Image 1 (cartoon, one colour):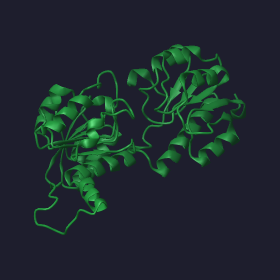
Image 2 (cartoon, helix red, strand yellow):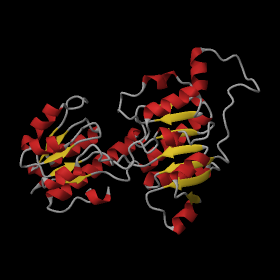
Image 3 (cartoon, one colour):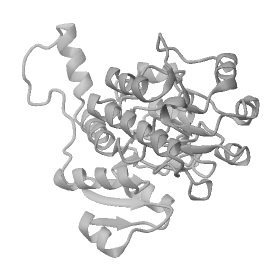
Image 4 (cartoon, one colour):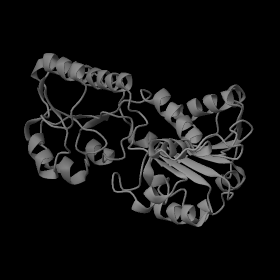
Length: 328
């Protein structure tokens, strides 16, 4: 199937150079604005498409897949996470799914460390004071935060991003601990200086900082539920740059308001943009608009991986980043 004959539908605006390259290679339909397609728009667009390029804001469920035209054979996701796509339904319909793993590793790990520093060192509070013109000068007891070095960091999810966070944390003098679905190889643990905890409960109860770096799956939904959040030390903080669904957001909000958790840094939320408004009222909470992978370099690399997956598929081969449901 020659690449220029492929009909490709892109659901969101991509970097200019990626859109330009797609125009050169494929019969591509791009978005004029950067709004989320409605379900009706998405269904209509898929009637004569060979390839769909969605992002995390698109819900590609079994109903959407079933309503697609017979030509649709590849969903080339712009992003690593695929929990917004019913991969099993796609496979049953003879549609392959690809993603862009590994591209956002370093950027997301950077943001994780930024959130840890922001919460523990009270950076947003200091910024707000300066912007409001309320600073009256240095004081020995003014704006006291905490020291990062020597703190115990518990990483929940030790994949690419979790390991990148571990390397950064070690450079800051932190003690690295982790819980993962599968234990790392001994040589990897030694390289990272990481201690494995088979019991997530025991790890959570002993850490100074918890970093969420696992994907959203049925098994990880509300993995940090109210019971487990209550195991955290009152002076501990939690940061999440992975998926909002991993934390019971309402339970965390109640505990933050009650002073049962010292602080939180959140880049993702359980209901997407519709997060608990009470979080905005708390000075010990840092909120970001899903910026973990938002670098110009990262977005271009993601687009290049999407193009590679489509081009390989067009040549009659399996996309290099093919998603296998059994491995999710």
